[in-house]
Image (cartoon, rainbow, N blue to C red; front, side):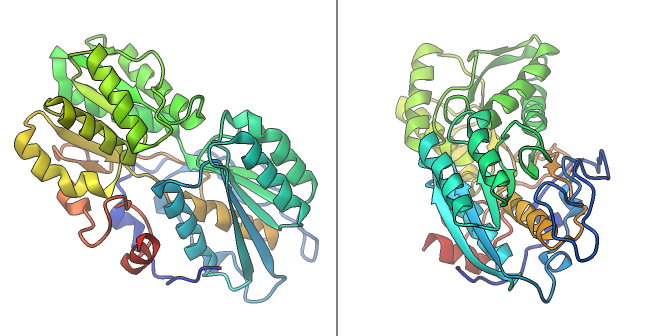
Length: 393
């Protein structure tokens, strides 16, 4: 296991969040084991399915006892190769290092392939892995359910995160931890609408792999806002596939620019892919429009230089929530030892970074920029500067 420093950047200083909203203080699967009883992998007092904000984070010390049976941990990511995935794994490893009882971490990268991803889940379960954390984004979420159910039936504690697995917490798996993608889509869309004003304009939406639920759910939030704002026209009837890859995003954006000469705003659900959007505009010799995406260090650090030659360019981001795997792990550890975890499962994220300075609680790109970190680092990460340097070097 990769051991890292356990110092965390205070979450309040790096994330802008909406006002505290909590629905459901009790867990969907809320019956805690009696003292001395072996925890059930579908029954735990972990506030499964509850909604709130990062203000409600706890620490690993709150759920990891000083003594107990050792834990084996497996992480399965339907992609696992891009910078976001690497950061997510590093955050999980950093969190795991704060619980000495976690004796190993095994990682499976799905490589955009559903069979590779699901076989990784079942393989970990067959080994008797105690906790399996799954990002079910190699395809539609429900396609992962047979393997997730099989792992649960084999006795592993399965918590999905960062992409909706469908199914039911407490029946098919223990819990699902994530942002609310629809809420994120609403946050980005409202910012775009505010910037375009009464005149409105044309916008496009770039997503990840075809059918990725995190993209389609964010897209639904966008559509909800636009239903009340007819002055804004959505040119893309569904998320444009980029596989969250900057090169593919550049190619897709070049195609959109050839098809639609007047694009006033872009929403992309992955900040690193948005770098490809910028390159497509530069190649076409066009001024950048409004851009709403997730935070990415290159976007933050390069904003002011780009703004000088692109007067219509403004940037808004939400947190890339690379920290969400920490929440999933803390909930799983609490369940394993029969403890309690009141943290929300689903997080409502407002605008984190806003170049116009108008979004409440937001930071300017220059303040979000991590000058000593690589371009594909995530400004809202909970990794320390030393951990970020170790990850990318």
